[in-house]
Length: 265
Image: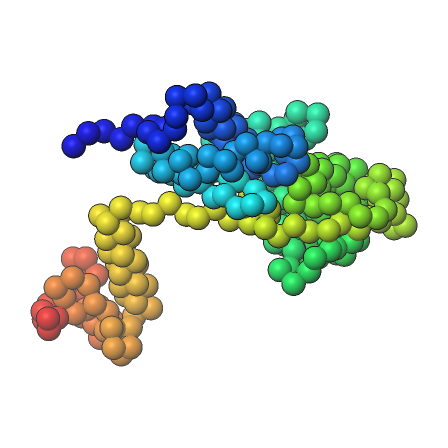
């Protein structure tokens, strides 16, 4: 069977345009009507079907393309050192753990039913979650905490996930009690950025995962001293029924007497 060939249906005269579109998709985390620049989305969408087939067959990647954004979901869609430049401030400084955590909490505070949110409401929503995490927290009187929020909101606004409609971020930075800003939320772009379709596991991987889940459930039952039918004092392990509770010398510990009656089935 012949190996798949990239750009098989692309005319030679259009090959340069197709290659340019592929480079755009590979080098940008998300492409929208304004990011990285106006007109880019149209250039990429022209070749969306061919790119989707090529990236899937050659690399196992999934191209998520709509009329409003394009996002490439890699086979192992996780952050690695080569992608650190994606999460950085407007000045090019990579996000630290606080900023990455705030980014997740801010997105979690968005509700699908809401189309806009004020900065004051957003901070009130995510502050309890931040303070519930040891070593993280959020205090509006701490300048480092406020600076992290500013970087996160700038990052989202730069990608079109948020759009400032009123007020200013600078006014909130100067005075968190009196300053405020109102943002429109683009939920589609938020989903494209942080909810890519997960990679499908191979059949043997799914089998191993299912087996591991069963073994974990068996271990949990054994730890609780309950058998498969929920009977206290009976815990199932492969090939044995161990008695626990008040059975004394039949508790089944290593090196001690135990019931070795084979479990039915």
